[in-house]
Length: 208
Image 1 (tube, one colour):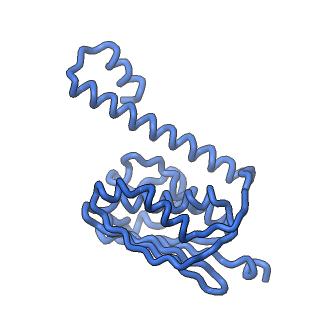
Image 2: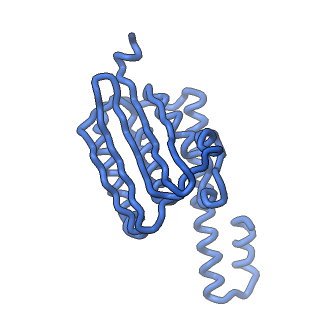
Image 3: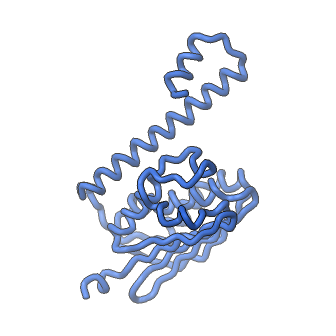
């Protein structure tokens, strides 16, 4: 039943306090999901049309990732998930707002699909030619059949991964990484967690 349906129930039915609270919660969750979907669709459209106003600056990736972890601290504590990270001080010339989308999406997924009391490992390193970021979780994992499709738009793996999702997050992540001269890959097995590996290639390599 949609938001309108639940809103009509709240207006027309005599409900217990428990039912009233439940319906309000559903409306709140659905409205947030639709708001998120709208924002993601707008971002994808502008990325597709190459009309997104890229604002390039020197971004400290280690600081940006740490800040993302801090923002999600309450969710991590709620599921008693331990985050370990090894982040070298790395600077990438890019759009800070777009780059935040990557870390936010990968960390949100790593929390959402993780087991209670699980763990997340994040690493950031660099060489002369590339920057590498790895997000590894101990969650429900992704089947071999699904792994090749997870970056496609509106693709959602299974019922366990359909809650609260729009099916757009990883597609945005892939596009943003490609805009920054990078690639992303995923390695996973059902029940054994997932590893996302991102490689940003240095500008010199692109010019050669």
